Length: 526
View 1 (cartoon, rainbow, N blue to C red):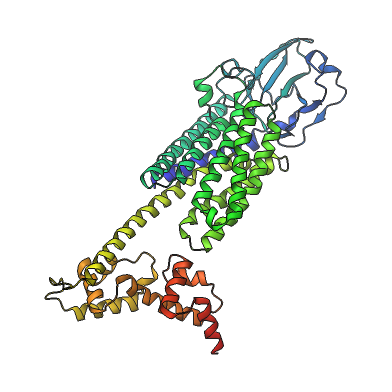
View 2: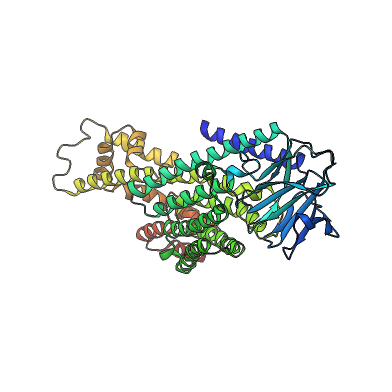
């Protein structure tokens, strides 16, 4: 568990660090802004703007505007110390230029953003578009200006950092990105293993989802693409939306197979198939058009519909007896919380917040526990299948002529062990555990598996499964009598059955009635 603690403390330190910077280094409200709707203003005519508006919040909030945004701040403001770094806290910005006066009528230009190769950025080592405040000349103007134009989301804070703060922020964010990559690598290995070792085809789609989500995280927060292709331009906004769209298609296909919606909830299955197709179509559209705002809305609306739909479907399937999906529900519950915060932010309903930006990236890593649980569950299933095969083998032997000609109970006081078995079943009630098998039973009474099988088959004339289920049905009948308000599925789980269907089948086989019929009959006798 050491690695999980390290990951937790790394996430916590990243969150605390960003909280500190967000509140202590946030200088967004020191700027004034102007929206150039006609794209006619340039630096030579900037002084003709009659009226500027003060930024009154701790983030600029222009969302998916097509206007050019101009910001200005006084050169004389002591906050903007020469050498300090202006960091625009959003990775995907197309074109951002700092105009810093070097005389009354001329300005030095510093460029950053996706329209320029990373190696030519004003601060190329920065993860986000950034600028170093120049040393002012004696004859400079009153204001420095920032021109911001982007087809992506423009809703973020502007931070002012000294050199140490800037380097510490890069270090922590880089560590978090490497942590995400490591977790994602483990998740990918487990999902591929589940797909090929256990023939679980849904995990093939899950592995695609892991890959696309990892690429999205690194595109949104990391720098691997810029490290490998420092001269690449304009790709980042497309890449983020493309990976999200492909991830939608893969995750919905995984969900359809994992929850078996085709047989259990056919109507929901058709909706998920339609949404998955929407994701693939959007991915193609993102690569061939420049409609970032439109496809961003499509992706967000898709998630708005799908997150509660999948969560409610998962709950329904769980109540049908599929206890194995409990971690899947926990994972989607987290997405429900973080996802909606992020969606509302992208739709312009809420402003920038650390949870809206970083929440989904770290919630995604918790899927590792979902995968580990499924791997453990599959291991448990293999053990259970092995024991079931052993039980059937012993039962077949018991049905043959000259059964136990070489008895395993020779020189064993079987009455003593029968009494011990009955006492254990009545006092400990191990049959309430769904995973009770012949091996655990043998260990509890002090015999080996074959001896225990012979004891139950030959002396009680029952198979092991029938013997255990007889106790479960007796327990269920008692609960149905004394707790009429308890649901049938709750009674099934409480008495050691793995699903409602297996409980109904065994109950009717034993009593001739379904659990509901039995409960009604008990009520009529009162």
